[in-house]
Length: 470
Image (tube, rainbow, N blue to C red; front, side):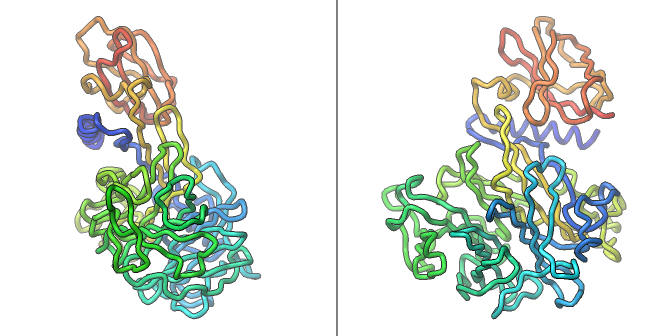
């Protein structure tokens, strides 16, 4: 009940500040869907879908950076502690054709002949702890992967012509300044006339520098010249409200000024018609969302879409130090007195969905204790005053009783002139509609979170949230 009351407080706050926004995060909508690696989900206490330890000798890993290549989604994972013949902290690659993330994502890993995972190996660089894959892209049938090295102080570019089984180094220093962490997207000049150069097809790279001490920066490069470092042009700020570009990385100007950015991911979301950037930060703590109409911004103020205290992280699938509170047993062996944490949000760019005004984004997120990768989802609301679901943002907030409920709850409204009531599920679909009564019976609905509104003369008068239990 305490968590639910906290949700209502947060919900009311967000509604109050969101009237002027076109798109905003729906508080309380962030959920862990699945633990993607290992054999045993510490939180659900069930076997994982992918059984990666039994199948591939992957008991724990982090990151999980998705990109599309030749009709498949490839997923780049980070350091695997332990030695099965490769040395410590190597990086596996998985792939999938699963396009329904609601029940988790089935993965197959690239393997060697004995069935154990084949690590991503780039000749000529160190690939030890904290030296991990950053992002990938498919261009002209080739797979390109960006990777950090030198203890995450330099980024490089590698190419594979055999679907990720082997790589060659094609640029031994993308950056040691502002693009040590990298997120890459395809782009065309027909979309944005202010891109530099004359080539229509290109890529934009959003990056950050020193880990968790950097803002975010941008560069553009013709896609056909991705192996030519000299073709990069860096965003150097605005002149007369238009972006300017420079060949010198030292001229970079931040597109997001927030000196805490570590891992980050970006994507153009066609449902939102916005560029979306996710990153982890310490202040504000959690996974932060920003949006913009163009890749160079201006970006919206940061919204925390996952907070480990607020969004059922701690005491659920992220470990709480037992010396502070013994509320979970999800920790790795011997780490019961060590706090867990969250990092590394990576967007599945092709798996967003929209129902009415609600857009669901799916992304991986890493946890420190337990050391693993989970699949997450969060819901964004498109502010459209002509759409019925957005009436949830108007009128006064009320609290049903009891809440949670197993089926029947009371709405504390004394105004008898209310005409009807509607309930929406987390995907924005109307699941209940009836003439207004104080007592509402939703026993026939499955367990879950529902958003409701009461209406008089087609105008919303009150809104509420109710949690239905089994």
